[in-house]
View 1 (spheres, rainbow, N blue to C red):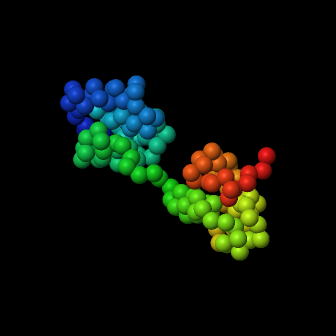
View 2 (spheres, helix red, strand yellow; view 1 turned 180 degrees about the vertical axis):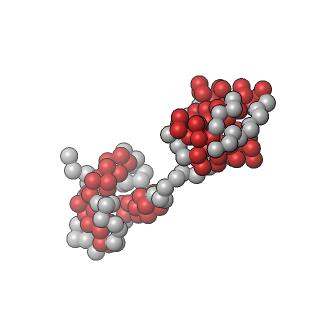
View 3 (tube, rainbow, N blue to C red; view 1 turned 45 degrees about the vertical axis):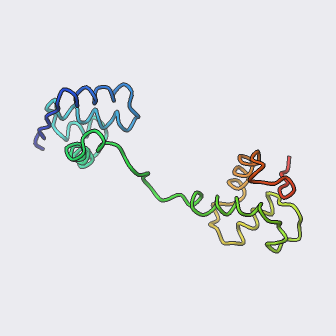
Length: 156
């Protein structure tokens, strides 16, 4: 594979070198790839050295050419959108605002068992059951404004 010519200004060179010291892991890796490219290394050599595909290295170089240093930053989170953030957490903060009786339960106070059963009843995926609900409730139970003491009973 041929060498891709990348010329860096002194300022860009300094910024990329600074990222090697103070940047995030992602920015260190990307800046290193650009520094190697500017030093005349082949794309395949850089890809092998960083354990990345050559297409990935090329995409970093293209992003740098189009947007400079800011083009190396990722503006999104890769992967599937979080079900917990979009669906589960808003629902779990909604439940304690009302009594379990309002949802058809024969209890006056919310317990983790009741909230977990309510979550299952609303047909949330099986992987969002008791452990994650329990952890969530314990993490935010100190926020009295979110969970009025009369509506939530946490087991010891």
